[in-house]
Image (cartoon, rainbow, N blue to C red; front, side):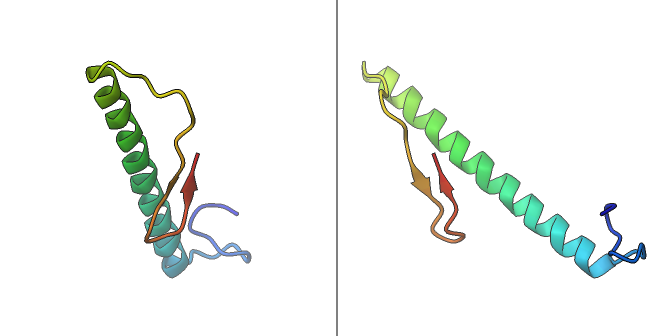
Length: 67
């Protein structure tokens, strides 16, 4: 499906706006998770430790899991 168009090929501003909003929110959630893991890694290094296992996170609001 071409961006912003429905299955008949017509521009669908409502669906387009909804998809854009969800994509933007997912991107922000991804960035928050990545930044949090990087912060933990820096804190561990500063304290003389290193992370040796995978960190698993679950976003409370969306329920998405990050591994």
